[in-house]
Length: 500
Ligand SMILES: Cc1cc2nc3c(=O)[nH]c(=O)nc-3n(C[C@H](O)[C@H](O)[C@H](O)COP(=O)(O)OP(=O)(O)OC[C@H]3O[C@@H](n4cnc5c(N)ncnc54)[C@H](O)[C@@H]3O)c2cc1C
Image (cartoon, rainbow, N blue to C red; front, side, top):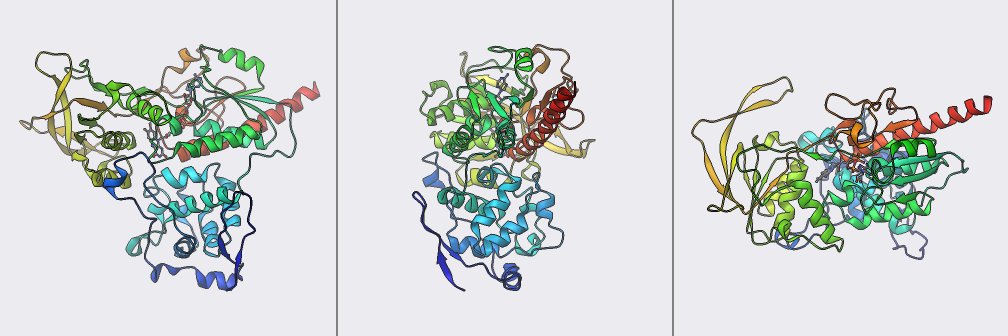
C-alpha cells in the first residue's frame, strides 16, 4: 500500500495515512479480531495520575488506531450502533479509520454526534456500544470510544472541525435556556440551520455539567471551551450570569423569541435524613465537585471543600460518587472510602470508573448503608459515620434486589469530610419559571408531548430536565432532536403567518 502525507496546515500535525483501498481490500483488511487482541491507549500509572487533574488516558498512535479499528467484524446488524443513543454509524467510521481515511471517518462520526471528542472520553462505552459489540464474548470488544476520541482529536489538529456554517441565515430567533450538552447540541444544530440562537446560562461559564460537574481528569475543560468558541464564531450568542426566572422571565423570552428551548438539567440533590446530618463537614457532591472544578479553572477553592489531609467518606455508587472519590485522592486526602449499599455488580456507575478508583487507592465498603453521623466529641463537626451491612433481598418492581439491613451489623467509620452523592431530582420548574401552565411529570421533570414540545406553545424541553439525571450522550441526542422539531415548528409558523 502506498503511504502519502496529508498537506500540512498552519497548526496541523502531519499524519501518515494510507491511500484509499478498494472495497475488496477493505473487507479483507477488517475482522482482525481473531488475530489481534483489544488494546487501549496507555493509561497513566495510578500514583502519577493521583497527583494532578490531567486526563489519564493517552492517545493511540496512527498505526494502533488503524489496527484496532480493523478488529471490527462489520456485522450485518451492528448492535453497537443500535445501542448508541445517537445511533452513531460506528462500523462505517471504524472501516474508514482502518483504511486511514480519517477525514471521512470524522465526517461520518460528526454527522450524528455534535461532540464526538466528548463522548469518546466520557460515555460509559462498557454499557453502550462496546458492551453490545458482537465480538465481545471471547474476543473483547473493539475499542470504540478510544478510536472515536482519536479520530476527533485528529480532526481538530488537522483543522477539519469548523464552526457551524448555515447555507442561509434566517430571521427566526431561538432562546436556549441552559448551556449543558443538551443546550449546546441544540444550539449547534439550530445555528447550522440558519436560526439566530441566544443561549441564556445562569452560571458564569458555559458548559453545564461538562464544565462544573465532570472533573478535568475525565474531560479536560479546554475541550468544552474549544467547542463553545466554535459555536460563538458561528454566530451563537451566549449570555452568562442570566438565570431565567430571576434575571429575565420565561414570559419575556417567549415574547422576544420565536421559540424557547429549556435545557436546564436537574440539580436538586437527594439526601439521607439521618441523625446528625446538620453537622459541619457533610456536603452535597455537586458543591464539592463545582468547588474543585472552579479551583482548576483559576477560582479560589473554599477551604471547607478541600479534602487535603482528611479522612473522606463518599456515600453513593454512581458516576458522581466515583468523581468525588477520585477528586479527593487528587486533593491529597488521608484516606478515601466509598460507602455503597449494593455490591460491585449492581453499581449504577461505569465499571471502568470503579476500577480507576480502586487503582488510585479508594477503599470500597460494599453492601453498606449509613444510619447516622457522629460529631467529634461534643462539637459541631462530623467525626464518623455509623453504618450497617446490607443483604440484597428479592427483586422488586424496578427489577433490582431490595437492600435489607443485616441485624447487629453496625460499624463505625471515622471521617472528617462526608460527601453525599445520592443522585439528583428535578427542581420545581413551575415555580422556577413562574408559570403553573408548564406541565410536569409525577417525578417533577418537564412533561413533553409530541416529541420535545412542552405544554406551553413555542416552548420545548430537552436533556436531564425531561429525562431525569442521565448521560451526556442522551442530552446530545435530545438537544439535536429538539433542534429538528424547533426548525419544523418555526417553518410551519412562518408559513401560517405569511398566509394570514
Ligand atoms: C458529577 C457528574 C458526573 C457525570 N459524569 C458523567 C459521565 O462520565 N458520562 C456521562 O455520560 N454523563 C455523566 N454525567 C451526567 C451528565 O453530565 C448529564 O446527564 C448531562 O450533563 C445533562 O445535560 P443537560 O444539558 O441536560 O444538563 P446540564 O449539563 O445540567 O446543563 C444544564 C445547564 O442549565 C443551566 N440552568 C439551569 N437552570 C437555569 C436557568 N433557570 N436559567 C439559565 N440557566 C439555567 C445550568 O446552570 C446548566 O449549565 C455526570 C453528571 C454528574 C453530576
